[in-house]
Amino acid sequence: MSLAFTPLRIGPIEAAGRVFKTATAETRASEDGFVGDELVDVYDEWASGGTPLVITGNLYVAPSGKSTYRMCGVDADDKVAGLARLAEAVHRHGGKLVGQLNHCGPSTIRSRLRTCPSQRWARARARCAATRSAA
Figure (cartoon, rainbow, N blue to C red):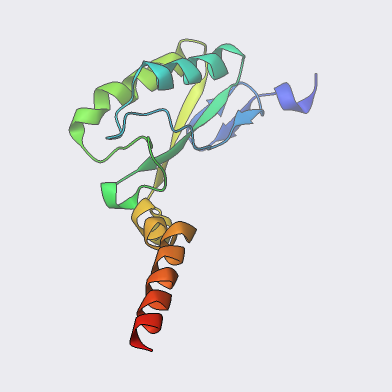
């Protein structure tokens, strides 16, 4: 048997194999970070394909730390039921689920919006217009 299909223990977790779904940005949660059917369906598909260990996409720990839109959150108790649905979707197929907790620091949505190219261009045009009118 190939090493890829032999069990692996990581701390208290034993995965049936060594092929993992690593953390990605699914962008399928609701705008306010709740798990919905769209996100559960994606996790169910990965697990039903035989992935023994699924690592969630970034799960923001505070709304101020979101790196992208429709990012899943773990910042409030009312999100637990949806997160349990993700676990159930993976466990139903014999897989394990690990959450990647995250705060994106200076890479948050707000930070990127302040410096996105269109806004920098708009500020540059405004400075240029101000310079022309002062002359």
